[in-house]
Image (cartoon, rainbow, N blue to C red):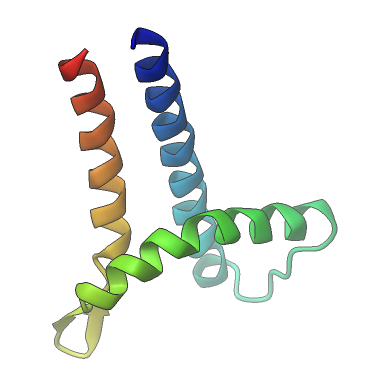
Length: 95
């Protein structure tokens, strides 16, 4: 049981780091508008988005972006991130 908890916790931690990478990558077009990834960077960006899009898209179906004036705040990323942090903590509390 302890091994399963460690593996699940490790997977949650790795996925959290992938989500953090996605967050950083999503800011690049805003900070450097003419940036276009090439080669290994393009492959890494695509892999990160491929890994993180399914859960974020799933949450987006049920939680719509919050309108703040003319801006929409998409909370799906935050919900997925928080869910992983809580899941990782619950795994260790239940062991």
